[in-house]
Length: 216
Image (cartoon, rainbow, N blue to C red; front, side, top):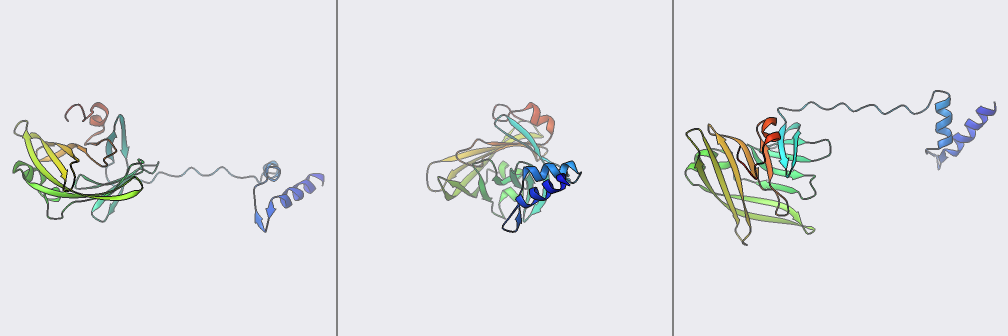
């Protein structure tokens, strides 16, 4: 009876304005009689939609599971909240790194979404529009991008995409390593205050290569 009385007092102490609140004495009493809090269930990892994205940032290498298509881009979301979107292998969104790319817009009839390798062989000029936050405000920059193709041999080569702002002198250069007209690795810009993101075809490439220093 003494224990039951203590349990009631603890229960009353755990109520405030009609809402239950945590009370250490009450929690201990419930655990004593086998009615305490159960351990929270371990969340089950959702299956990846398609193959993961192998990406590197500076010295970090991770595989991010896919969550499917949203609009025209395929999204990949890491457990820590990092979110990356790709359209046809080209970066369109980066969230969760502290410096984020809100959106990269590519012309629907441009080479990025069509014959990218063929366009690079012909020296095509195209455009991009990037939106990102900087110093507390959203920036929308338009870029003119020149494509060029450096052939290593018959089946391999490197595409350089040199982009410069329409208004201003800043810019960046993306690089794409190609085999059999398919991009297998790439080094892509996402923010003027950040380093380049590295994308790999296989985990072995991600573990052994730094595309800032060597090719794929």
